[in-house]
Amino acid sequence: MRILHGQVAYRDFYYASPPLTLFKEAGVAALLGPSYGFLASRWAFAIEVSIGSVLAFFIVRRFTSPTLAFLVTLPTIFFTTVLYAYSNFNFDAQILFLGAFLILVWELDRERWPLMLLAGMLCGLAFLAKPTYLAMAVGICGLGILRPLTQGPRRWPLFAAGFGAVVGAVFLAIYASGIWSQFRSQSFGQLLQARPVSRRQLVYQDWPKWLFETGHGIVAPAAAAVLLALAAALRRVALVPLAALVVILALFIPPALQSSTIGIPTDGQMTLLVGALALILAINAAASVVLVAARLPGIRERPWAGTVRDRMFPPMVPIVATVLEYLHGVDLSSMRFAYVGTFLAVPVALSLLYTGWRLFAPAAVARIAAPAVVGTFVAAAGIVVTQGSPYLDGPRSEMTATFSSARLEGMRTVPANASHVDGVVAAIERYTSSGDRTLVFPDGQVYYVVTGRDNATKVDWYDILATTPAMTAEATQALQEAPPRWIFVQEYNESDINHTDRLDFESQPAWKPIFDFITANYELVSSEDGVDAYRLK
Image 1: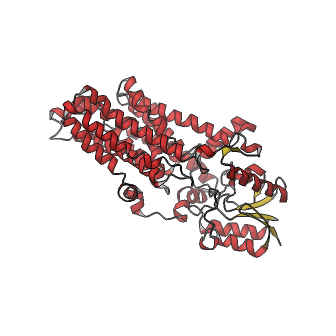
Image 2: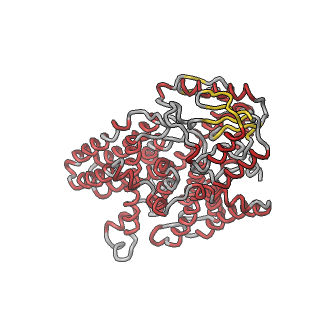
Image 3: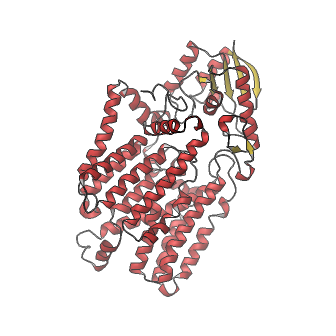
């Protein structure tokens, strides 16, 4: 109820996601009190991603030695913090599910009912952070039903009961509050209403584009498949094909070294990122097929199948690792954020390489070299893309300026952005007073928080990917009924520091009605670095 009334950090009534992350952030804010600022979310994020790597370590540790589990988990430190720099629902869901899966793998033998219920409850919380995690709940139950082939949880109904209890309790509370329809629309329909996604996009995401068209990322998994097979066949000279693989993977790095200046990875960085993602996904997907095949009637009696069953992961581990990586690409931004799902995928893939090599191609040096090459490539990809895509500002070496506002203390940016933000804040404070109603359109989130002004509408960021016609109509009506004295219109996206692409308000259904109202009822008084100050006529 409080969320739907805009009582959140950014006072946005249309937060298009279930409520868990908002309450978590509210808890962080309450804990830190006056110290809660923009960097606080980054502190929470740093702790959260560290927990993700720890959970992945303990999941892999269930089936391997401590040393191997540590080494194969190490690359996740560099590969799972690529673009996000703040606490968010994607990581909340991932960490909660990893906690659930940790319980499942350590309870494979006993499956005590309280812990199975707890695992389901954690998965339910993951769903309340990110709706697509419903697939993980259904998937775990499916693995349990197919237990003879997947070694999934035997007592999966308890897992399902825990999931249903948490989700049902939250949904019941929302229904009892009389806001079920609004909650359902915002949390599970708003994004699709604003930007319909085709079935093809949901299934294939951006994989075809980056694997075969723009980036040719397919080269990484294809080269690995061929050269690792050669290394296994040519045991005495296994290091030769592995050295060739090093060279091929290294060729992905130079095109990715140039820093992005638009806040998202360059094509070279995306090719590197997708190459690493595809390589990890291919290893886990192939292993899933082999591990399931080793349990099929007619195959399970073969000697290699018995070795696989006894010495490698149960099939459900690489299956879950594969799906987690794939699932985080089912997003409006698609492949750009698929790396979030690799906390488990990376260590599982590297463990499979090491174990498979040890069992079927026992060349001691190559056994270590194969996972080391892939793991180093994954870590290097994370480091290069992270270094080259710092927030939305510019090259990290140029982020030397600070902001004047106390709420932004400790943050650094490029001088042009610091000057821009300080200038806009000064303009807002010059024309309005603390607590005044105003509108910074279309992307004024930070300015409401920094200046202490109230948004005259229910939307802080009129993102064209998430703003529906109904939201725009409601905002226009609110402005008509109670117009604020001052409105500030941004001529460029807040991320467009260099002012390269002027916003076209007339062509965007999410913007045009509001912009038309402003120009018809307000007069332009001044401009400050691409932000126009309008006063009510």
